[in-house]
Image (cartoon, rainbow, N blue to C red; front, side, top):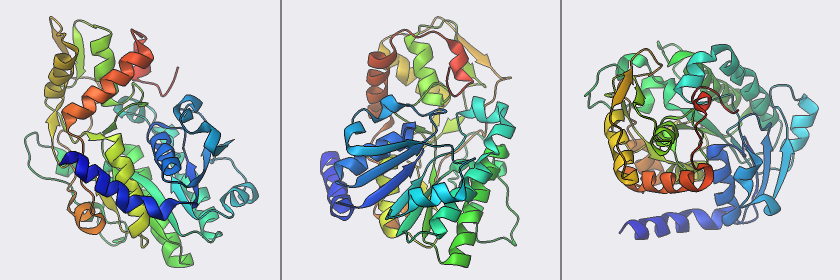
Length: 356
């Protein structure tokens, strides 16, 4: 049944992308590179812009001979240059951003504010081009902390909880990174209103999978288990709840949104299921057939909201999208990739930085 669902989603996606000219900003990143690979598989003509500050060319190995790549910093690029890069493109997927896991975004508040100018430069160029759509990678961090503050809550975050079109309505977001992304959605809607540009924000939540780095939760947990770190440290008390969503599901939802949403309507992409950090660690340890003698709970470390999951009703109704991968299957795939790629890497500094 699961395989049939995957085949049906591929059929829904495939025909529309053949010979499309598609630009992916941040296309050498974790999610961006998976999106690039899928677009190439679907027959699109893909160009990638990335400054390689956290993205890696090795992430594009599967598609490197079938894409165009340009190393560009979109924060400092000139209007003329970015417009020339956008010219003749049909669709732009905008994933370029200064980002990282909780440890990074909480300890680099000024750095992530660069996203305000990056987004503006992209939207300016998009408005000056005859694009079919601009798909903006947003985040669950646009949602108010107050809705995510109680462990055990059954509440799932709805797109209406942070509506970028309701500028007369009080809004809140998760630290500077979340505010920047919320402002990005507001900017996107402003360009849609003023210039008639087409756009769609897709809100990702705790995405994981191959090519992710150790600043993010799942890879950090896998890293510590493979490295046999004992006592095994867990940030917070381990009861924090997250909506872990496999990268292939995120990519499929993003493509489906690009095909169907043009008016700035935000779309949640998440499983809608909550998993405690400690339970996820136990799953990882079971898969690796190893368990530490002791868990060390570091409650002084950054943990973010206590209970986060996205309501994906809108994605189901408007896109026909549903997540395909269980957490166990996603973890197994990710662990296998990490073991093959990184072995026994033990440099713990990577848990707080985008790259070393």
